[in-house]
Image (cartoon, rainbow, N blue to C red):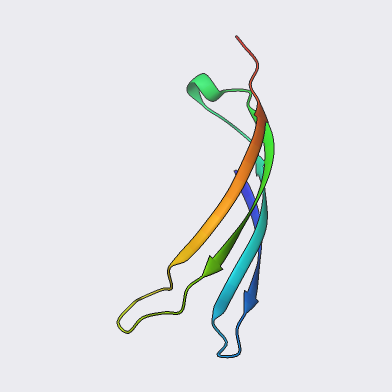
Length: 69
């Protein structure tokens, strides 16, 4: 899958949200020949003390086609 994401920062310079697109470029096994696209977004929560990275809440969807063998 190829993903392209745009991050939006907050006043403190931390990531506040992200939006992106996805393209399925290759599948293996039973997913060989799959093609598809998708989009999604994430909203990051404020970091808590001691966290290495912020937690986020996201949603997205992928539309795909899979040819029968």
